[in-house]
Image 1 (cartoon, rainbow, N blue to C red):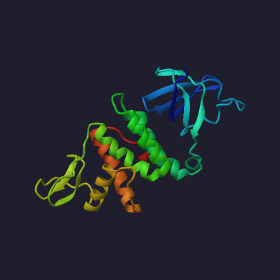
Image 2: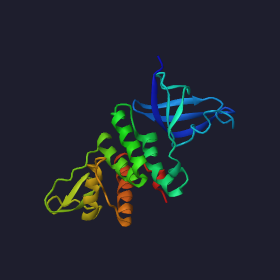
Image 3: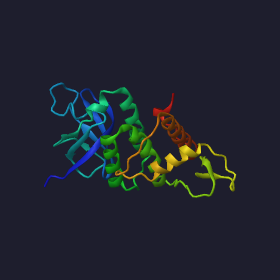
Length: 219
């Protein structure tokens, strides 16, 4: 019996003369598929072996095996033809590549990621890295009287009482809490200045606590 699974290609590497290594994020975690011969113009899997493509494939329950019985589930062509959308999508995929570990609820993470990418890449670039902080061991605390903003160092709201330095404005802190507790049924309206503020927070928080600097956020 064929065991089919699905996965999103978050990175590709050339392999030998005519093949590629496809790095997939799946509901069971990260795996690598060897796509033999797909660099040939006539190969049936050439198009589906591209970066940022959700595919179905035969899963052999290993960490690395050959691509077979594959088909495209979602090509994300609208994203691929727009530089800004590609840049937005790159952030959650970079997070998957460098920071996600084996001991996480990958089925739920996968569903969230695909839903966000299909809905709004901007939302994906903001919601995904903020919500992943909890799973990576850094829960954000928004409880506090008379909040002034949010402290990156302390991972909590800065208040008059605790006297922590507020790295974000109160307005940005409110939006940050909405992103952190976001559900796929929520509707968020985000203004351009707030986008920059949240991305600045994401970069600062990950650099300070996880010692990782997102390449996709560097100027």
